[in-house]
Image 1 (cartoon, rainbow, N blue to C red):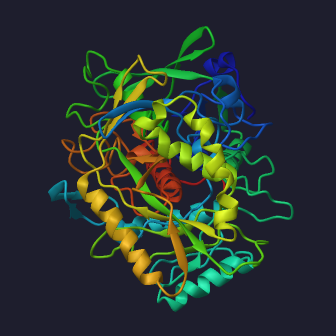
Image 2 (tube, helix red, strand yellow):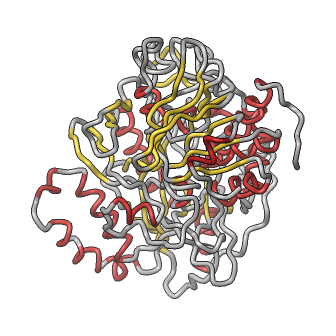
Amino acid sequence: MRNMSLDTALAQSWDVLVVGGGMGGSAVTRQLARKGLSVLVLEQGQQAFAESADINKDETDPDQRMKIGRFPAPLTGTIDGTTRDFYAPLGAGVGGSSLLYAAALDRFQPRDFERRTHPGDPGGRLGWPVGYGEIEPYYQEAEAALSVTGTPDPLNPEMNYRLASPDPMNARDTWISAAFEKAGLHPYRLHVGIENRKGCDWCLARVCLSGCKRHGGNAFMDPALQSGRVAVLAGVTVDRVLADRARVGGVAVRAGPRKAELTARAVVLAAGAYFTPVLMLKSASEHWPNGLANAHDQVGRNLMIHFGIRFAVFARRNLSLEGHRKALGFRDFYNHPDGPFGEVQSTGGEATAANVLYALRQRIDETPLRHIPMIRHLLRGPAALAPLLFGNAAIMSAMMEDFPYEDNRVVLDPDTPSGMRFHYRMDDEAQARGTAYVKLLKARLRGHARIQVLSARPNLNFGHPCGTCRAGDDPARSVVDRDGRTHGLENLYVADAAFLPTSGGTNPSLTIAANALRIGDRIAAHLNLSEEVVA
């Protein structure tokens, strides 16, 4: 179905309302459509895009931001005691943040799903209520839908990959891969959802208009729309989820000046780890005075944000850069005794003046220097020197797993531009891990490849939030069960990054998609529809 009007949506009956059309919302929608369910997707942004722009662009007008797939409002966060407003790398529209991502689509390791301890909770709260074996078939399904290319991780032969073959690496990255192998590392071709067609511009950090980059919209939502059982209601704001003590009945929405209530047999929240909990908190009522499914004050808690260290790897001069741009990864330190650390991967970006300027401004925004007039403009000079300093270097990211701490959380705040505020403190153990990670990288690569660390401290990736409605078996310490169903409400589900009980040591997008496909099957079973209707 095409984008639907509010009047038409009100005139029809729906099995499921899905709030949010990002990676999780799109994947769960496709799976529900395959089971023959009628689904209405409620999306704040646009359904399709005719414009694209790099995320480095300084654009603050909300309407213009929405036109290029970017979340319209700045986030408000108190980070290590300092409160500030800033624009995070979040998307808006069908596809969500996957519209802007760099399409790195690797799996969590089996260990990420196992129960283990961490420094903030030695009693052991890490781990999923779902094992790796249960989610692996959905990983395979998501990889196929997202056209993921790459080679298997040689250190994890038990992971049953079904990946398409990648295009050849460029000469520079081939040299770097060989240097890594000489250092005793085990590089492999990074798992990426970009079809490197002739003339492909890769569209890292911006909307892809050609379809080369696979994301939630073109991989999952488009096939769902073709079933005829799915429609998108774009440009709509969901104000509340309507619920009694045991069930939800629908949602209250706004479309321009109009307000209305839509009803369905079930509601799936997929507005992202920042805003799914906010909607649950906004939906407080006499039955749920602290917010939906929040009897134990867990909604919004356990916010995890990946952090990492960027570094440049210098190759021989005059090596060609023609070819696959996001090519390499290795996991030799993923479960290191001094960690856990995570995956090291190509960012796909080069040390251009624009990319360095963006990185410098991010760093300045985290310090008191951001208050100095003209400081952001003055950074253009140092950034312009980047190509001369780094030349043929590849920019890589060493990612680190974040742990769930209850005081790192999202709260409702109507006085902020986004209606949300989050509190986050980087624990001392994270700082120590970052220092250990840098030492480990330098020691291993010494004599094989020259590297330059670009991060003075671990950088938070605000585009990777997760865990704010974490899954678990104990209702007192979690928000949803293994099927994504909220504790206490039999037909309200969460199918986005908020579900994730652990952040893993790699990009979460593929895991969000795979888990959302799995939740779609569970919702259909709960609604007594388990037979597949379309392939």
